[in-house]
Structure formats: structure tokens, C-alpha cells
Length: 130
Image 1 (cartoon, rainbow, N blue to C red):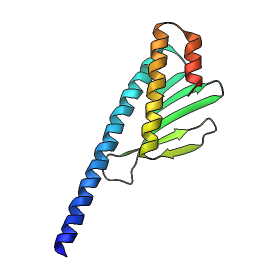
Image 2 (image 1 turned 90 degrees about the vertical axis):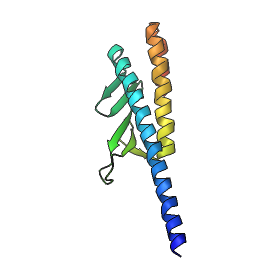
Image 3 (image 1 turned 90 degrees about the horizontal axis):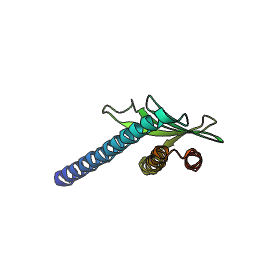
Image 4 (image 1 turned 30 degrees about the vertical axis):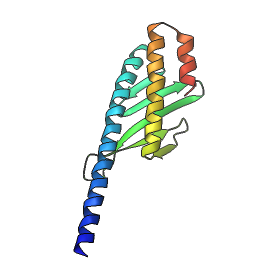
């Protein structure tokens, strides 16, 4: 019985540390996307990066991705929230967070490249496609 308990304890400990690694990787990717958003925000008023929020202004409203510190957990852990134009906050699980952060990253990289070429209409089109 002790062996089973010990095995379960070690197994769950391994899963917990793996989950923490995955979330910390997501944190690093968000920070990279935030950096790109800051650069793009200096060149256009359609992208805003302030605090832990990346906002993209579209023709029909604003979409924001927010990184919030989860204070219910003793370690440094963040949850990600998608905020719509109406102010509705949608908490994202890990898979959703990965998809949304990746989408923001792709859009912001395309905008950054288009801004280098001074294609303002293409920038508008890219941002509105989000």
C-alpha cells in the first residue's frame, strides 16, 4: 500500500512540475508577443500594449488579451483572459491561451512587416481579420 501511495505521489508531482513548465513557456511567449505589440504600438494607434494587456483596435471594436496573476496559487502563476469590446472577460484554459497568443503573435508579426513597407491599408485588413 505504501508503494502505491508513493508511486501516486511521485507521479502527480511529475505532472504538476510539467504543467508548471508548460505555463512558464506560455508566459515567455506572451512576453515576446507583448514586446512586438509595444514596437507596433509605437508606429500605429491600432495596437496598444500597456501593463499586462495587449489590445488590437478593429473597425468593429477592440479585442484585448490580458495576463493576470493568479493570487490563489502560492507560486508565480498567470491566467490569460480575452476581453471583448463589450467588456466581457473570457478566461482561457491552457490550450485556448496557446491558440489566442499564437494568433496575436501571427497578426502582430504581419502588421510589423507591413508597417515596414508602409502598407496602411494592408495593416487595417490584417488587424480587422483578428
